[in-house]
Each structure stands twice: as structure tokens, then as C-alpha cells.
Length: 532
Length: 95
Image 1 (cartoon, one colour):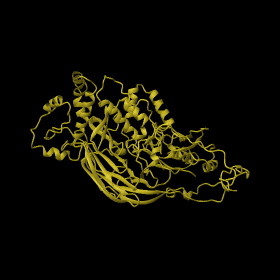
Image 2 (cartoon, rainbow over the protein chains, first blue to last red):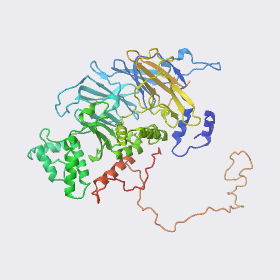
Image 3 (spheres, rainbow over the protein chains, first blue to last red):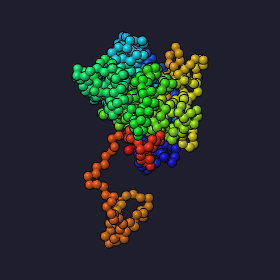
Image 4 (cartoon, rainbow over the protein chains, first blue to last red):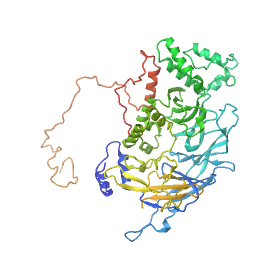
């Protein structure tokens, strides 16, 4: 901690004192208390694109054309001018969008009947690759054929495009046909280092791909029907040898062969088998309940109550969402078919499973009301964010596990909650986390600034907009107002009746931010906030 | 000058002028105390290799709790306290 809040004094102090071990980034960040976006250019005239976000290394600004067919990439730069007088304002010719951004290129990604999903974007920082998605129209009530789940809509063609952002060259594509992947806000896709997990909701498969440095998307495995790469081969080769068993017999055999409850010796005939991942899950639940009791009769009672009573519910679970916990482990969220597609799935019960991709074993299984899982979430939230080793700054995003102020906010939500289990369900509903959904900007660091989380936060979501500016107040004494971010026109909007939403794009390390206020049927108004 | 600190600048030229450990005519009376172990109980095994645990702390917790649940219990217990209950999870650091 610096002794003075004056920037020059801090620079001198920095020359003399080394920060405490492991806090060099925190110390460097304190300079953001001195350098913040103090000036605002209101309602800047800018190209009519929908601006998506700054890449996490600050090199590019990603935007899409209004018709959602083209990708336009800008390079953020800094304006520079000099003036002779003592107190001078920015000249009007500098108050333009072009002063801050240079267009690098415009690439057409979507063909005539496709649109770019403007909420989807993943950045591979090590190679400066960008992953985008285009899709055709969505169809509901399509028949569930070929292993598809009933109740999940179908999209004729979803294409993932891998681009080199330096020059806009399209490196590779991955197409999913007659499938459904939840693209909104990166929900159905998770990127960890160079591994990509894409959840096909319709066919209940987790596709694991690798993004090579050459720019190729390589299939690694597909988890769902089969867990190991050679499961399909094994099952097909043993079809002719064994007799076909029907489902009731399978239940009986699991009763008597309690030690070996994974049914991988039976042949497959159409869909009489449960999928591989489901079998792993059921056998894990089975063994857990079995080991709760010592005596066989008690074990059987426990199984009747807890396993077989809910058997069909467990069988009907579908994969909702997936994230990586590290290169070998996935956190999978299971739920009912109804909640899988809708965004607000809070009312549906859901389950979490930790799955080891290499051993194909389920390591842990919890319901969404499990206090044990909540305690792990409270203590180790940062590990759920699964930041790769390459992006160091991602370790410094404030969460309730690494920041006392964020933790106090969590405690206040806990105290206000009507019941602890409701609170647990609400908190665990945010798991698994969506990839790259938090801005690494130091202005969202809770130890530096205090701001209203309902109006603005590191998460890139649209928020209801107010006419009042959003204040960023310093955390350290004296707790003064440092800067304000005001979306919308300077004088406030003329029509207060219309609902407005705002979104904020903060540059990861420069004191530069865009605030975009959208009103229905009107062109959005873009403000640029920068350090003048 | 021959002092250990050489000709480094200082506010006051008389600072550090008394300190001359390299001067052989005035050997320093202060020899640093050395400590020798009286037992070898705390010696590491000769083939010990120290590496970072591949699994992060969250996964380690998941595995520990799973091992407890899957191990047959002596007495039916609702409370799942981890075996090493005395250990506190360390706050994750960047280093």
C-alpha cells in the first residue's frame, strides 16, 4: 500500500520500496486510483455496428454489423494532441470515434440465410485467435430422431469459425447440423487454454476439441453416448455374441450384481442402453448410497428409498451446461429437459457432477441445494473460473474468495435470504460459469473502487439504464468519488418513459471505456470515457 | 576505502566508515553463530522430489470428499468432516 495518494509521490515510493511477495500486480494496480476515465465524449458519431467487447489483451475491439453477417475488428489506440495554452479542452476534431479506434478489417462470416450470434465470442489469447458462431434459424417441435432429445429445438446449421484476429483470416470451421448449442453469452461452449468443450444439447454430447497453434480445430473426444474412444467399437463387436436383454431384466441384474453395476457387458440394440455418461452417473450414485450403510439389509433399504424411487428422474436428467475445472476434469450440470433451453432455470432442480475425462469416472455428484458444494464455492470460487495459466490477469478479477469486500457483499445477501437452502440454490445457479464473461479491467477491482453492482459490473450483461451517472468511489480513505460513467446523452434522455438498457465495454488495462445505451427502435447512443 | 560497501553514495560521508570487515588488521569479533542439528529425524528422504500438485485445491477437495463417501463407514454418520480437519485451505496466491 502506498503511503500517499499523490501519483508523483507514489512513483517515487515505487522506486524505493519493493512490494510484499506476490502483490506486485496489486501494487501496480493502485495506480489506477490515479489514472481513471475522467472525460466523457457523449453520443459519439460512430459506425452503426453492435460492439461486442475488447479482447482480454486489449489489442482488438470486436463488433458485428447490424445485419449480423459481418465481423468488423478495430484496433484501440490513444489520441494524442498538444496545446500551448494552460487549460485547454480537447479540440472538436479529436472528439471522434476514429481518434480512439482504427478499423483493421471487415470480414463476412455469415452467408445469406445465416446470422452471426452477436452474444458469442471467445478469444484464444496465446495465438490471438477469435472464435465466432453463425447459425441458421431455430426450429421448435422437430421430431427427435437419431438419438436426439425430445423438447430441445433444432438448428439446421451451426458453424464455429476460428479466425486469426491479426488479419481476419478464417483458419478453420466446425459445423454442427440439425443440432442445438446454446450460443447466447457463451453458455454452451467453454474454452480452457487450447481445449474447447461444446455441448450439443440435442444429442446430449460434449464435444472436446483442441485449437492448435496452426489454427486447426481438432476433435479430441465426444462424451455422451460413449465415454472412452473405443467404447463404440467394443459394443459393436459384441452385439452378435450375446442375447438381447430388455429393460426389466437389466434392473434385476443390477439388484443381484451389486458390485458390478456398470452395464457394459450387455449388447446394444437400438436405445435399450443408457448413454455412457448416464451409466457412470448412476453407478456413482449407487455406490455412494451403498457405502452409507454397513449391513446388506440396510443397504437395500437405502437403495430402495434413495436410488430406485428416483431412478426414472435420474435417467431423465440431461446435460445442461459444462465447464472445465482443469485439463482433465469437467463440471457438468444436469437438469430436466424443461430447464435446459430456457435461460432462467432457477425453479428446476439441477445437479452437478465432476467428471474426469481421462479415467471416465464421476468424481463427485451434488444437488443444487448441497451445502457442501456451496462451501467449496464460497472458499474456492476462483478455481471454478478455471483461468488458464497463460492469462495471468484473470487471477486478479475480484470474487468473494479473493476479495474481502466482495465477500462482505455475499454475506449480506446471505443474511437477507429467507432460507439458507434458497440462498445456496441461488448461488449455485451461477455454476458452471460461462467462459470469458468477466472483464479484467482494474476499475472493477473491489479493493480499489466501490460501485453499484446492479448498474455496472465486470460481467458483460445488459443492464437497465438510469439517467444518473454511475459513481466509482475509492475504497481507501478518504473514500472520495473518483469518476463517473454516464451512459446516454449528456443532458439525459428526453423521453423518460421508454425502457433503456446499457452495456459497458471496458478496455482491460487502458483508462478507456465505451458505454452503449439502447432504446427500443432508436439507434443506440455510444459514449466514450477516457482519461483526458 | 576498502569497506564492504565500496564507494556507494550516502548522505553523510561518515556513515559506514566504522564498518571494515575486509580490513585484516582489525578482524571483526562478530562471527556469525552456526547451528547444527542434534538429530536426523527431520532429514528428507534421499530420493525426495518436490513438485507442484497437479490437481488444484478445489479438485483435491472433491476427491477427498468422494473418497470418504465411497469408503465403507464404521458407523452411519451424516456429518462428512474431511479427514485432515485441522488443515485450513490456503488462500490462492499468484506466485
